[in-house]
Length: 319
Image (cartoon, rainbow, N blue to C red; front, side, top):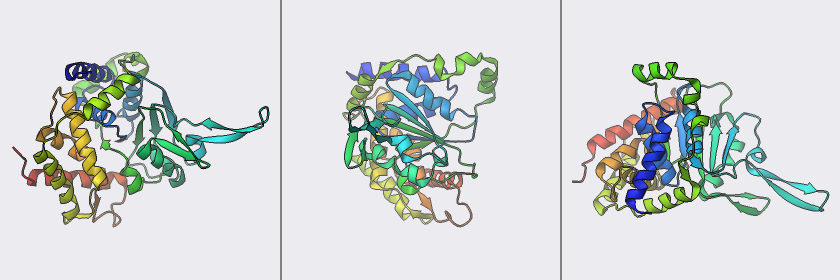
């Protein structure tokens, strides 16, 4: 696949998503960038703005296997990963795959599950495999996990630990629509705004080809130095207790490559890096005020985003 073909296929994917997710082109491009970077996506926002709809629409737009898991406090790791059972007819133990064994997995309201169940996702997200009873099972490729959560809902929730947040390449918010888009939403037919109205525009093989092509997008040395400067600045900021990890730096690089590919280029620019920096680093930054009054994930995330924006405004952009 060449770059022109890639641009056309990615454009078709974004346009397909815009049929349902109206007026959110930036969020759509970041979501697609997470997919192309072989990362995972956390969609965090208030109820009713389209978090689950976006996740489901991405899955419907790709001709690949899809599973949705509704996370609740009584969900067990075996409900996600699978379980080994004894088959009386054969006299053997057999492994029954859980819903994690799909190309696209939606973890809906992920922070409603207990830490034990949340931790069951760590190996899957980092290594695309799961280990059960000393046997390792590979997950299908591509493997893309989308998770949703409401940052303002405290009852019955378990905030995601830093190790879990660090596994997400990006965290995005959709926000409320403009008044014009909201009028369009309430006047259009319900069938037009559902993920079920979408048809696949990409196959799983094409997604893998696009992911491979993303790795060939050129990133000059001065841009990698720019990325490192941003990440290191998060560790030295006076209001930050814990800065972004090296994984965060890699996520910026891969996401910037993906955004360049989405925009039809074979090379990255500083604007690509700036466009993905908040989404890739905001949730990785632990501020000094975290744990001393403002402890919910929503406040923590908002403060982290502001700090990344401040760092971007202060660091010299390579020309």
